[in-house]
Length: 227
Image (spheres, rainbow, N blue to C red):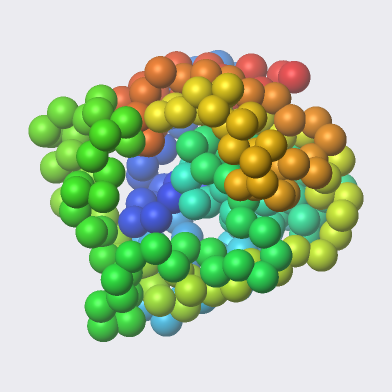
């Protein structure tokens, strides 16, 4: 199966290198995406541009692909499900929940000169970064790509309620499945609260399992593709 891999903020397609190699060994076709503005040097890229890139990958797949979104890119994966409900096999959301219609995509950190740079590790101390050693932190920080303002502050637009019928797997790295279910029940993710087929997988890692647990993450994705 084609497995589209969409990394979160500040990351390009190379973030998936180790996961992709493992997925290929397991017989799948990984498609790591480098999004407009996050790897191609286009500071003017918009959220619509990124959505278009994901949809192009969906449309290019020979069979219905599994769409994987990490962190805030859970929203990009969900936007693809919304736009192509008949063309995707399912969605896997790693360490993130899709934003609802009308909310900004990722307006979380300061904008500097039209971009949102990586803010350093202080905001992520605790469970997010607990499993990252010094080398891993340096690797992520040194390759972090500032996110264009028009991406970070772009507004999520959802329209097709068929999205709620698409199977969703929530991979829980720095939090547990029990916590995820509680947050959803409390209204933290109105989109997943309405999804008809949601399953949860625990992964004992921090927020960047493609760096710290690539083999385990790949196996979870492969199992999700077969389910």
